[in-house]
Image 1 (cartoon, helix red, strand yellow):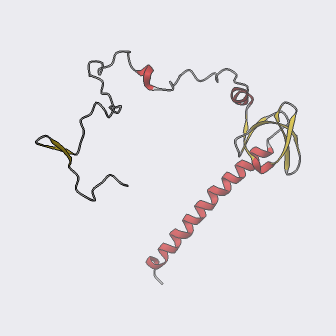
Image 2 (cartoon, rainbow, N blue to C red):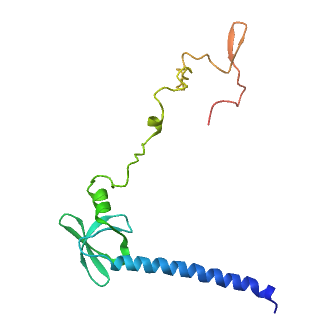
Length: 158
């Protein structure tokens, strides 16, 4: 066999090795994070619930999800171990982190100077007009008779 025939197999094996290696590194980092948990630290579960670690067992963790409310979770259910400042900011609503000085507005109203370039444009009314104001459609006027313009079988039935 020539090198050209073996090249696709070599590339495929190399790609599989790199993918499994990065996944293994992520798993090891997550396991290290879970092992670094100590009673009193704040955590976020994989379901998005914030709690404080009370006790740590081999495969389980006792979390205090509210004052006086305890729940047992598997260690694998811990998504992130949070530092004290971040946990207090999220759970208790404490002040912002020290490094954050930029405030992002919820809408674009603060980005304008208060004057709009479109102030002189007339507003368009998109509401429906009452039926009695509108002229009747689909009618023909011949002489003094008003007759329906629709032929037989072309009614408004749906």
